Length: 235
Length: 294
Image (tube, rainbow over all chains, first blue to last red; front, side, top):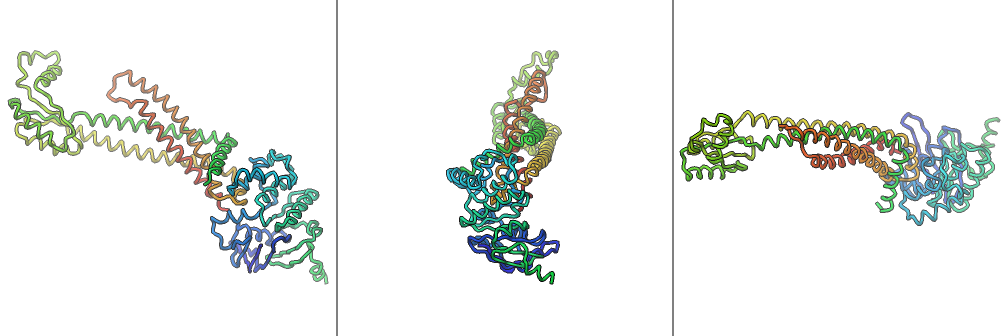
């Protein structure tokens, strides 16, 4: 589903964000990417979305060789994935319904398909009643759920969430994480970048830890921090 | 592009124009102002070229035959004028007409020619040329025709008109080009503000997989709506002012005559529509480019 082959990313200012990363995610997996800010986890997501290109190595996503993708083909890669951001990124001048429908309109979907899919997606995140409200009138948690509905409306095989709970209080964060779990349960591969220890620890999913551009740990049913590593530090 | 996408794009363009109403109105104001200035230049240009054209059409060359020629000889001269490919058209002025004109010119002093027949008046041809630049050659050619007494023409006047015509054409073209560039700069700047205010939206659209054209088109529609609205207001303003001006000028006697309102409106309409659409579309395209690079 997602594969990094010896990927190195060096920014033009000389910062090496990723250093020879190898990673493989299978279909249906749920993985956390954890690390401090500046560790390189955002860069990984940027490479998946082709917001940035790797300096060396190759990235494969959903069957696309992302590193070799032409500029004109980028929209089609992005349509094949759902993305959720920390700052929600909803269109302020469109209602909740229109925001979700927009993701289908850009694919030139049939209006009848849109009328069927959008309510389903809104029902999934529990926002059917807020369909005609503008994002500005919603709470942060609700806005994130709209963003999630939008990310899911095209039935993507892969969902990427960049700090999805970064702007939310703990309780709302849990709602979002539950939804992500549910989406994963239905068969969608989910990648979540976060630095929220509580969430990672209690979800017991695959954890990929990045530090200074290197994968320092890749663990099934992992924790946010590595006890072994901590042990070594203190011994 | 599919029909439903086209429908979506046009609708979106209108909605966006309406949602950014204040900004849109400001842009319409700028377009209107530019259009009025452009319209004024256009009106001046049209009137100048109309008047130079009229001056050009006035008879410039008159070929006089010797008074004692008989009809046969005059017909020979007429033939050589008629067969000259450089001649656009010519008018025959008979002895009687010449005398009548002479009397008119003399006015109160008509008695000078009183009692005289029209016999001493020469038959003449008023000649109009296809190209005024050839007048010198034509004149010498006509002079050499047997039986031609004199050829009258005013080189200075012809040169003057030719000069003015060229000058007016070049000057106007330059002014209009400069003005269009200025208008487009102002409009693309105004649209840049709209685009800047919505750069986040553009960014989001890119992230969820919209193609560049899908993002670009509603902005272009918006630009065209603004351009056309400005053009329409400008058109009304120009029409009203020109209508009043035309009425005033028509009342008095003038050497300088004005093009009719209808003709002005026709010219202004298609120029404004083209310019309105053009600057709106190009302005939007230029302004949005930067924000599509995600």
